[in-house]
Image (cartoon, helix red, strand yellow):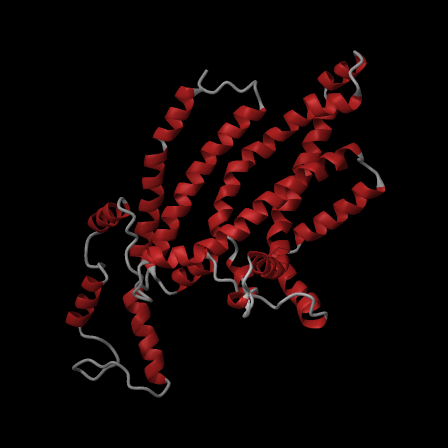
Length: 342
C-alpha cells in the first residue's frame, strides 16, 4: 500500500502541470484577451456620451505601438511556453500575479473570499454526509414503507430542481412574503456591532439557512440514494443470508457486514467533495449576493482576468489531486479487501 501511495503522489506533479498548461494555453489562444476587453469597455463608454480613446488617425482605437505596449504591460507579448514558465516560477513562491481588472494581488482577492467559500463548502460537506448516510441506511431497512416512498419523492423532486431555481423560490417565499430570513448576503449590516461570538455566529447562520438548502439538494440526494441502493444490494447478498442463517442477529449483520461494504462507494466520493470547498456555485452566490470563489471565478472568465482565473485553477487542481488521494485512503480504510499495489 505504501508503494501505491508513493506512485500516486508521484503523479501529482505531472497531472498538475498538465491541467495548468492546458488552461494557460486556452487563455492565450481564445479570442478576446484583457486588452481587447478593456478597449471594448472604453468604446462602450465613449459611445455612451464620453470621449473615446482615439489614436492619431482619429478612430476609436489604439495604434499598433500602443497595443504592443499594453500587451507587454500585461505580459501577453511573450510566447506561451515562456509565459507559462514565468507564471509557474512565481507560483512556486505563492505569487499568483496581479489582477488585470482590479490591479490587486490575486492572492489577496482569493484570500478575501476564501472564508465564505470554505464556510459554505464545509457546512455542505458535513451536513450532507452526516444526514445522507443515516437516512439512506434507514430507507434501506424500511424499503417500501410510507416513509421511504414519501422521502424518495421529496428527494427526487429536490434533485430535479436546480439549486438556483430553489434559491429563487426560497427567497420569494421565506424572505419576501413571510420575511423569516434575510434576502441575501453573508452577514447582516449590524454584524460589526455585535460584541459576542454567539451573536455573530447566530447572524452568519441565519443568513446561511437558505443558501445551504440550495447547496445541499444535489449532493444530498445523490449520497442518500447511493447509500440506500448499495445497502439493499448487500442485504440481498449470500454472505448476509448465510450470517443470519447461522444465528447472527439481523441488526448486527447489517451493522458489522452490510453497512461497511455499502460505504465503499460513499468513501470513493469522499475526497472528490473536497473540490466543492473552493468552487461553490456562482448562480447561487449571485442569487443570494454572496461574494465567494465561484462568483469570483465566473466574473474573472467574463472579464478575461486571466491571472485570477489561473490562480483559482491552480488551487482547484491541487485540491482535486489531494481529494483523489483521500478517496483512495478512505476506500482502503473501509474495504480491507483492497490491497493497493499488490
